[in-house]
Amino acid sequence: MRVSPWFGAIVAVAIASSAAAQEDPKAAFQAKYDSYRTAMAAKDSTAVNAILAPGFQMTDIQGNTHDASGIATLMERMPAAMSQNSKTTVLEATVSGDSAAVRQELAATMVRPGPDGNEMRMEMSVTSNDIWVKSGDTWLLKTSFQKDLVVKRDGEVFFKQSN
Image (cartoon, rainbow, N blue to C red):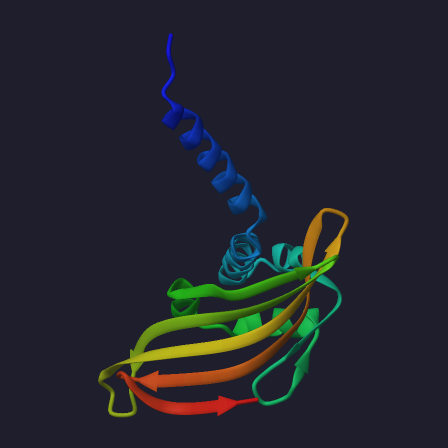
């Protein structure tokens, strides 16, 4: 059986693409953030804590810091509608040994009664700079620092703050 020279080239490209996809830090951390968001939406503190490194610290847009127990409190207060309509997107990810710097954006939407009693659409976008550390074969979230927050009401910017 004669094999086309193109067959070898196609196989080589497929293998190289597969290896590159396995090494893509953005894709690897996207999966971690998807798990984290799912755990937060389910208000599953055990699953959330499994993603957080010992000594985890999150600094919110107002400069307040929260440890893992503080995140649990925030999770309990989170409106159900917001957790159902949220998406985290990894914007950048750079791995250096057992540490990784990730810039990510959380976008959430919900519909709720406005001041006049009519429904309004709320949109929130938070951009954070996060540090992950590797423990054995597992990446754990060590710090999260919120950089930008934008809140829109019916498509118009209602609140904006940067750190």
